[in-house]
Image: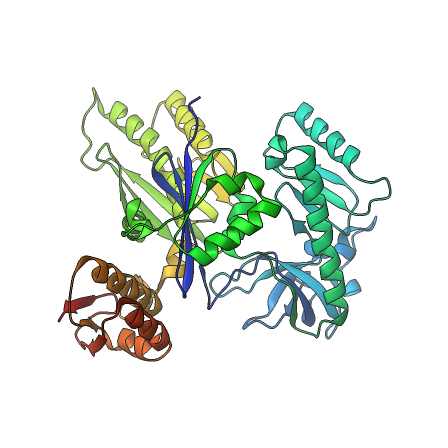
Length: 486
């Protein structure tokens, strides 16, 4: 099997951090974290139970966010640790203080999902302070390897150790020194959580997980990663210091990108983001996919389009479906689509061909870091699958429902357009000479640039050494803008 080449691109601006995972020269994943909405998964809060629902065996907990967070009985430690199953109303009451951890970001109209079964993630291990068992990642399937990793960890732990562990996939290549360092790290974090939780006020943050670039180093960087390019010196130096202590394999791979072209332009990431906002995805064979995301599920429709090559129609359909598998796997990762996913492959009458397509889908989905479940073809010829969803999809981060079409379509947020304008201004300043730059955009975008993003605009103007003026165009839709060189 040829070696998999992977590059990680980290683009940092004062407003947001974006990370692109590039495998074999193709963008496979995008992660975006904005300063106005930092990721919550992994954070620990001191919350207050505001409502207990016995009928749903769940509770809502106020942790200081805009919406109350959701806590199900299956995620309450006291309800799962006993011999008999306890009801949620037996252990929780309204007004009660409880220490909880976010396991799923707020998505759409739903609040964050919580657990009282706390865990501290390291690079090679996940520490379970309230439990005592040692588990192994489900992605490690070889039983002999699983037992070896368990025995190896037990030999490194002190005899009187407390708590349990989950052994992550990257432990397979870790040295004893790296495992011991990880044990020390998660234990130290847990000690800090314990101290903070004792004095924490109600509805307050007790522990904040690492920022996006550091999480990428902890969770994703591995022996397949060739290099990590960072276009911010401050972030680069911070990652270098973090790597020296907690992710040594990343030290030699980290590079500070100082090129004239924006980092994402060098790998066509901006183009891929634009394509990922479209419902239609073209296949090389001439066929195409139509991807629709709804509140309940995501549908993928495979079509032959203009592909009419091959000896017969059945051969054309089979080849289109096979190519669609590869494309579907990439698009689910790129767009971060999760939950229930229904794939409508083009109908195939041959059972052997159907099985080949299903096996190909399973093969290409094996590269996905998210937990995947794939069922066979249903009686209607549909493939049902699930992909674990812990954060918003790409389109939900970058888009909002269109007021003109009452939600049947989508457009980029004014904030997203503002950030695109700031990036375009920086790009223009490096490519063209002008006395002044004038931005023409919709009234909403101009208002945002004059209000919340005024400081960002002023900082950029100082940086490029040229004035930037704004003009609202009432006929411009929200996504449209122009930059005029004066």
